[in-house]
Image (cartoon, rainbow, N blue to C red; front, side):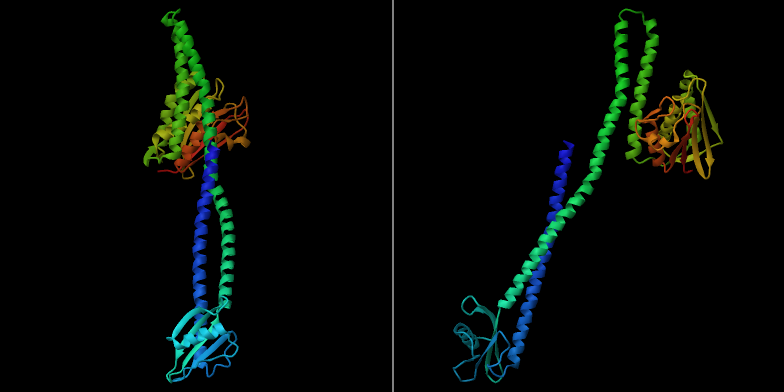
Length: 396
């Protein structure tokens, strides 16, 4: 369905763009034709005026032209020898008429232009020029412009097609990314939802046969499952907000945020028998959104604790380094392959080091938050030797 809509949008874009370009070319071509035709017509009028001014007799006009003269008081009209009867008639009528210029037909659809002039001595002169060469040139001009219009329209179609493809390509990519994201998010949510549903069914069944105090452990597991599901949903929401909403420009102490994250995650780390430590060199103010920064650090700590075996350590360090405020989360867990560092920040990425790290939305969220705060996130480590994630932000 989306592909069909994109194809229809592409076709509409091609038609509209090519139509607009074709219309512009048509208007320009028509304007050129009118201006050029008028210019040639004026040039012919000027030539006829010069012939009338220089004529002394009717015997030797320029090629393709014929003269007529009527002397004062003489009813006869002299016409250039060789003029056809129809042309003679046209010149006779013209020289007896009012001065000026007009087009006429001298038999056999032969168009001519006639110019009439009255001299101060009372002599009337008329000159007729064959319009066939002018009309022929105008026809050639029209054909040339038509060919240019067709070539321009073909070029417009090609250009419009390329532009439509380039214009629709980002939309197609965005739709593809949206479909992949929905599929990945659905896959990510399906497992905790299935576990949650199954556990709720078991609890409902056992509640009929067991006393309430024996269900406490299973209820704790149900709470843990809802917590995991809530974290996935929260990551989705925060990630979307980091991409599409402007962050507030407030001063935030990143060291204080890190301390709050460590305190809130301590119970979780202790439950996994992981030591969570916090190191700071004093206040570390940055500008941005406190909730987004807290969620990003929480994602880093959660990722580290989740990949450290029992007895391991996770250290959160906040300090100033090279004019930047740096938050560093280091662990001594399964580690990662440095060659995969770039792809680790893709949504729902899988690592291959150790038992295989799965990063879900967490690291993608961290990268979005860091970039939104004009910062960056880097990762280093090795298989079996832990990993270190470093968020670097500009100071306030």
